[in-house]
Image 1 (spheres, rainbow, N blue to C red):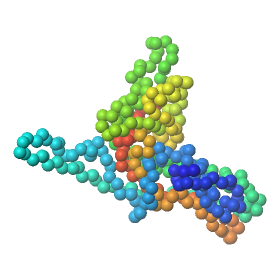
Image 2 (cartoon, one colour; image 1 turned 180 degrees about the vertical axis):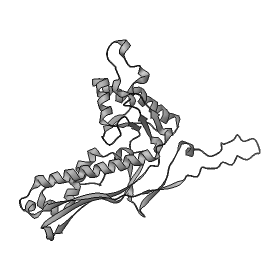
Image 3 (cartoon, rainbow, N blue to C red; image 1 turned 120 degrees about the vertical axis):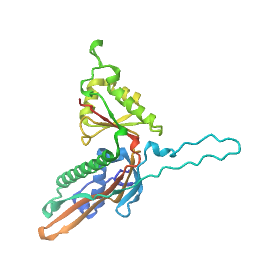
Image 4 (tube, rainbow, N blue to C red; image 1 turned 90 degrees about the vertical axis):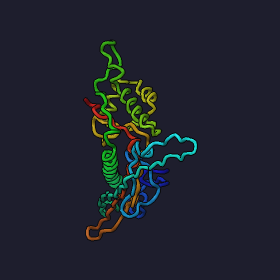
Length: 294
């Protein structure tokens, strides 16, 4: 099975003795636990290459960059076509960051085959790494998304869709209108972006569940999006996007797990780390909706 932090891993049973002898088993376990929680693969696609030189050199593509600086002209008989000039893109560098942590396993725990301890520590380390990677991915998006890809939405927490007509929230002020406005903004940029994913905070998911009830799936299907929910997104904010199209994520070092001996304390240490870089080449693939909590 392929995970976002690793290619083609085979799942194995987690045991203390085997895990310490073969840290790749722990690595696979971490990747398996991390994958459903990851934000980075929702916005970024894998570069497929190892990051060299400490970062990824990239250029941010804006709507205006898809056209020449001056327009083409109608040619008359015997005349030359007008000379057009391309737009030079400003090169940027997405530098790598080294994120990781470690935990200790005592000889006593190894001898007693304390599987629950190593499973607990692995889960906690996974959650911490995932939180950091998700924060880094969203920080990269926020740095480059720009005002042209940010829209003011409506308060999703007080939407009324059932009841007396006088109490109903107007169609233009419902979450479905915000999703339509995000797609309209993308369509008007003429870059071929069709949103297929909505990334949001659990508070906004709850608001949608309350507002639409069992009709939520139909609303999302009508908008052409599926949903991904994570507490790492700021409350009151959601992102409508084309999945994995905002840029690339590359790894100087992919998810790595190592085990080393510490005889001074009669124990072993397990450390896990990843060294990614996030290059936001196409911020226009994402539309940020704000003001959703009032």
